[in-house]
Length: 112
Length: 113
Image (cartoon, rainbow over all chains, first blue to last red):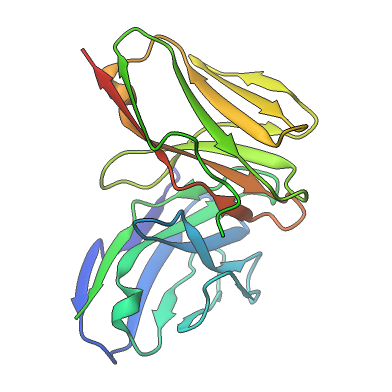
């Protein structure tokens, strides 16, 4: 079955380190998204991509970057991790813009 | 600010009862709405969606109602089961952009036997 997987599921790192979270989907979806989920907030959009070589900033993009070199993957990089970036990160994909997004099971990232 | 909100953060119902979870939205560009269910330690799972040209849509045991006049939608779950216990949240989407303009914070549904 097609799916979307995130890795690692849990990570602990130190402030100032560069961190990359992986997202891989096998649906061949063009659209991919990264969100963070924090207590007291709904899911907030970090970056999104409509296809290979396309990336766009979302609501909370500062300190994050993405790259889209193929259809299946959209890695999220924290250039210099900050404690405020401790969160649960979700990746999602959708077939078309007016279709529901399918989510991975998240990466819990702790920055000490 | 929060433009998509839920009226009740916690809802407790008895098994077999019907559940209603509400959501308000405020963005006039939103033309597509999605309900998600999220269990602990898992990602949001799609339940049902509705487009702005519809008022009601039914799925298996779930119904979504959309009232564009007051910018409100609701999720009705019939014959609620223990497996329905989870956090439910709505998302408002501008289908031109394809991404959710806002997600609600969620309502925790607890089904008691």
